[in-house]
Image (cartoon, rainbow, N blue to C red):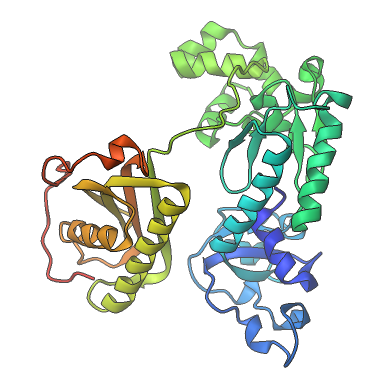
Length: 397
């Protein structure tokens, strides 16, 4: 999907189309702009000058996504908002609304499944689709079916997407970025040298900044230069698995199938605070946030049809150190109160003297709700993960 979160917001605020807009900094509460909603008007009637500007933002939040006009200033996902404000101070800033983004995510994926049932879910805004046996899937190299999917998604949601069609997932992923937004790119096997090899190595999904930096130290900046290196040299330099993988991807080889069913290992919810919160001074606020996270996680489990037995918490302190604790209960659950209670027991075992930047809750050891495993009688008594010593505190939330 094209600038997915931002595009969903533009459906809510169409008057912002064509303007630099960033999404981030906190979860949606009440937008400042909504306070200036004209009497009897809709969200589309709010004057543009009523929206908060990035130059006025103070805090340590990061950008979740940005519209394409904002990206032209070098603003992008995961960038700190204060840094982005220096690059594009005139950008409008909106809070995130994950519930709305998930609703649109389910909508566009359901539309795809009606046309092409072999679909691999890759997160809220991306999927892989196998065109092989879909009627018309090979027509015009797959372009006809890609156009059909684009039109169906736009007609139903008002959102655009970009599609890359290629012999395998590796190249299809790269091709999907060629003609954004609202583009279709067809890459054939014979196009490897002309269209893939000139690309920077970072365009390969799986080559991160550290590996790219190391490659550049050896004078390897493009996929073609990577392909020119001997396989044994890559293995000796980057290790057996990584080196062999680099050789394969540089030559456009990827035999991974489109996986329609993948069982999650765990599900989690977490939030980063706009300001540091302390377990004593901000106990009520932290307690409300933790309860909400547990309720949202329970709703995720119920919606996706899973239950779990291992419940854990995650804290990030103001010094960026992280603490986690887990506890396994004696029967599977998707109940918010049970998750909240067990998570609270985990919180008793972490130091809470330092201010907190982030709080999260997780449910692991998942099973399908209603499965024999999930319905089996309760086993041994609950136990906690003992990877770290217990801590005690009198300040729980």
